[in-house]
Length: 78
Image (cartoon, rainbow, N blue to C red; front, side, top):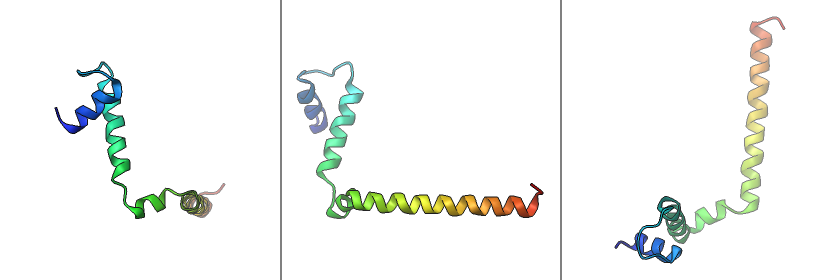
């Protein structure tokens, strides 16, 4: 039994593979990924960084929509 299977079985309190094994595996993989995050990745998950990314994304969309409007206005009579 691999480490992941052992964690999965322990999480579900069952010695063999459960019916919802895929769900349990995803939980085990997520737990392992959480344990191996680097400080740089953890910083990216902080609210201030997420807000900055969201603001940048919104600004990009505003610019993109403006470009599309200008292109349509230039090439088509609206």
